[in-house]
Image (cartoon, rainbow, N blue to C red; front, side, top):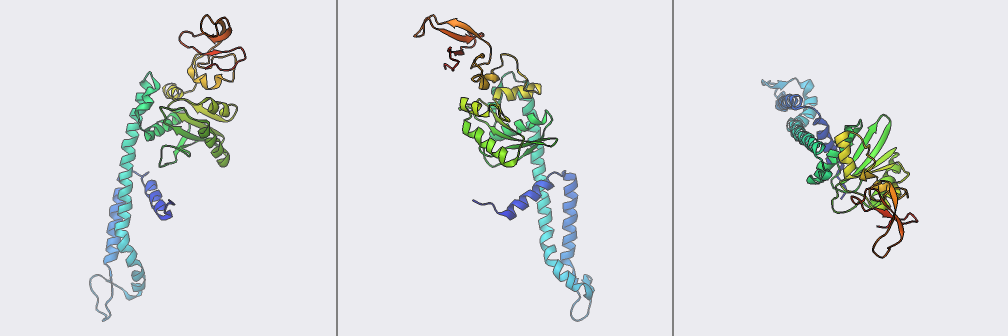
Length: 294
């Protein structure tokens, strides 16, 4: 359904006014009501020439005739808009306090599974705070759903980056979602793109993003960004899993170095393969032609 442009303008006005604190908007609302109410009560001079206490000179009668209908409406409309902006200000204020508390909770948690205990709206705001913590200016697009489109616009200097947030727990982010963001980047002329998930990505998604100005951020990476303020990884960090399938010298599961081994059981007994040096913690392997054996 196409959105009513007038409703969008009204909503935009309320949101802009909500940037002002209530100690500014409340007195303005009261003053506006008093002013427009007084104008709506003024009367022109009577035809007989007698003047009442509220009459104004005849030469102003035409102006008052034009102004009075607007004053009757504005004495209620202006305070209403300002009252709605105050309500929105308080909602944002308490929401920001909750987001700050949630950010601290995730930062103090040892496991990134803490990301799963929130709604998709909370997840998007958390992602915004994470990028803001490393120097980006963050704009929330205010989409009305948990999937599709751009969630955040990041600016740093003259550089603009787009962000899609995927608060998915039970499935990997597919290549279609990554392609979607890449198309929007080209359409808007964005320098970079980030897909941020609470989980991980499919191999096809990682392959599509490889070599492009696209960054696939896993839940573990996001957790690390919130905790440390960077994406820097340890040598055995599992976040390199998404790119390991393109490097035959690293484990496809965790990105650690591989070592030559000989299968001692199973249908491949006696065959040589390359296994993860972190075995038995990690069971990632590659066969001799460097294809992933999972």
